[in-house]
Image (cartoon, rainbow, N blue to C red; front, side):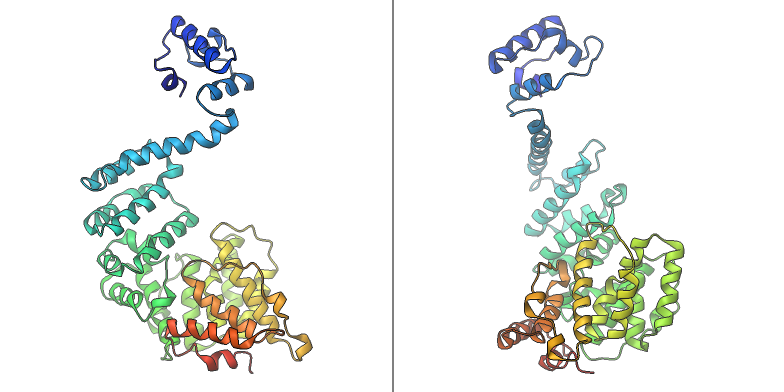
Length: 409
């Protein structure tokens, strides 16, 4: 950075003296040429003082060394990003090749790829997207689940209005893993996302993807008032599935065959024996949704029992799970109320729960159900808002009758 500011490389004693004079002239602060020689490796290195680091930072245009640490990596990333974007129209394959460079800053790589995908979707450049998802970028980088969730939901949101592009990418395992299985669009199970599910069921041979798709297909049946079947999932070996997928499959079994407390207890024991505690929370990801949809207060009670006894440190992606768990707890507690004096006050219902991703509207409908049955609430306003969501969903299950009778025995 100092070399760029000075305009020459520091290769010897003369260069060090010249740089020392330039620093003094620009900052009115002195760094000896010997200190600079040590910094540039011309003599034995000695760790510089904070005063030296602050002076160098000011020479390079920053307030101090802390300011440099905060800003400099971002400006380096901006520069790298601008260079790559020069090729987005004429040679996107060059960008894809550069993404696999080992020296590309991994801290910014994922966000750059999200921006890159967004540009390609905007340009409707399916060939370049095809090349990206075919590349080794997704397999060479060891992304954690929070990063995968960030990527999938960022891209999935854009494909709602560009679903024909997503349809053309469904043959790529990377697209299925990083987008299709992440951004589950509950709003459009009767629309484009339901068509994607049908496509994967017909064309994929990968058991993780077909099991996931079958579970979504059966949930769609439930929302549409059709029979739910567990037949195609019954014989699967689910041992190596992600806990979220295991829970998703078990939720289909509950919808098809009913809920048994002893069976859930046994599944939790098996999970505890094999995995760490946070995995149990992941297992309940879809079960919370199904418990809410099916008004299964026995299942809610058992979920609360299993999760409330744990002191969990939540990862980023689990914060949204925690919010829906909190909502389910409020709904369950309300179901236990027998008199109007026990009912939840509307002030307690309104809090800072933020529902993210493709679940947002679905969970909002349950926030409205809770509000509607709470004290001191303008029921007509809630009803209008609920009906708007119900019309957008267009699922027979979610109706005015569902709202009115949610807490009836």
